[in-house]
Image: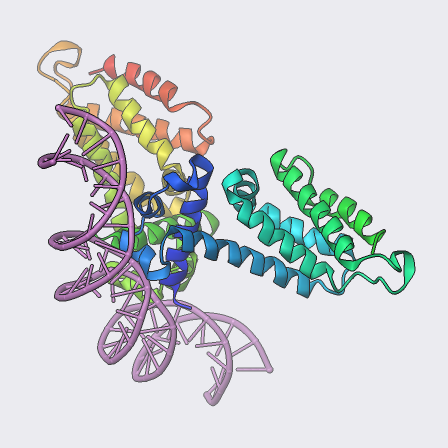
Amino acid sequence: MDRRVLKSQEAIKRAIIELMTEKSFDDITIRDISDRANVNRGTIYLHYMDKYDLLDKLIEEHIGNLRELCHSASEMTFQEGNYVWFEYFAANHLFFTTMLNTKSAAYFRSRFLDLVVQEYKVEVDVTDGQNEGLSEDIILQFFGAAVVGAVEWWFRNGMLLSPRVMAEQTGILLDRNF
Amino acid sequence: MDRRVLKSQEAIKRAIIELMTEKSFDDITIRDISDRANVNRGTIYLHYMDKYDLLDKLIEEHIGNLRELCHSASEMTFQEGNYVWFEYFAANHLFFTTMLNTKSAAYFRSRFLDLVVQEYKVEVDVTDGQNEGLSEDIILQFFGAAVVGAVEWWFRNGMLLSPRVMAEQTGILLDRNF
DNA sequence: CGCAATGTGTGCGTTACTCAACAACCTGAC
DNA sequence: GTCAGGTTGTTGAGTAACGCACACATTGCG
């Protein structure tokens, strides 16, 4: 892929995330973004319809990356798999902190929850074992919300624990229940 | 000026400075620079003849900036004027540290000394005062080398003192002698 | 020695980005 | 009201940077 595209998009995405840490999404103008990204205003329209599309694409990209990490970690235990995720969270903490802290970004939270539920679906077994007879949907929503909540708490509290500890502990809780 | 030019040149200049902190100038290839700068190799040739020209232009740019700072600070005392310089040194410490530490870059040292001597020329007066009868050239070379030496020492020792302290102390020594 | 690998400088056609300008639209101030 | 100031989305023309490929050094290794 062309270097220029990558660099422009990288700068634009970084810019909007930074700006969202400083003010509400509604107050951010396209000009704000182009200024911060050090890119011509028109360049943004080359890649995105408007700022909403930009945010959408940004969210979808991260959701997609998380899904991919999930699949490439399909052989792992929850502990190991979670570690990959928490590493990714830490590497992109600016994005996730913003997305899970600003209340305007509830959309991301639900996309995130959807992903978790979807990815855990293959893991749960209600035909055998401790979960025999239970509702698959309830289990998925229950532990999906649990994981999302733990991640939210982690970011809300400034990521005081290491990714490894977060992954291990949540991993234990999941392994125990699936 | 076109954003693209500025960004490319900025990246290229930063790249070569970084690389010079890691290996000798002779061992740095154009490809190294373009890789590090994340630009096409051909882009470098759009702006510079070769890596020597690149280094030259980089040096001249900083010498030019220092000269400009000097002139815009012509009304100041040595203490005040030096402070502007040391601020600039600190802001571009990567460049200056490299240029004054790697022994291959003796050329920069002499360009730097030339600048200092040139800029101090207007300050010295051998027709009156304590310097009456002394050789202007000797005074200039003497205190020029003194300032350059102090700056070199500062960088060599990891810039332990603040720019302000460096400026004040060297300023006092110069004010006392001009 | 030959020969593979790597770097250099250059030219090619294509494309992403640039700046500047535009009309249409809000918004707040007088 | 309206008028100035700012944002938006879009256009057009020019150009910097792109990837790719080439011929020609240079280097090191069997």
